[in-house]
Image (cartoon, rainbow, N blue to C red; front, side, top):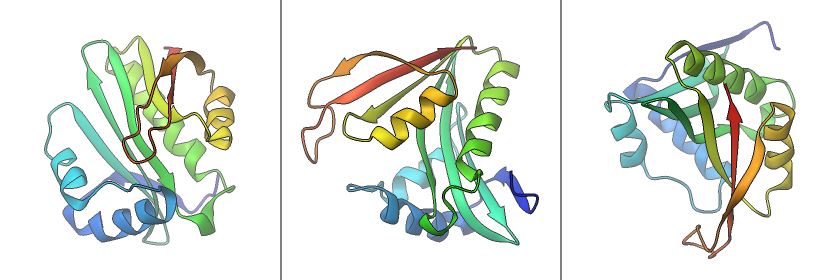
Length: 148
């Protein structure tokens, strides 16, 4: 992990940086209102990763009962491959365990092999498929989970 990397809860002021990373990372990015709402939901967490005060990644997840759902994670393209995403995911899993979650869940585009391998590295396994899950392309989502 990059020693200059710092993770912290996101603030409203972080939304422009989060949105910029989102737009660079996904074919159909979340809108500002999606992220804004996550800042205030009781069960949601939106955290950022920053290097030297610059937001370089974020993670959004929900803890509901005994499940932790990874809603969104992305790292700025210029910072990928430096351990930022891995640190975000590690912190998510630790936080979920401490909050009593027994399982972590996520959906990932079937075509996104890089992301699927990333999650598998952390012990996530394929549980199933949601057909035509992504509205923009009608692409399937691969359901993955990990016991905590």
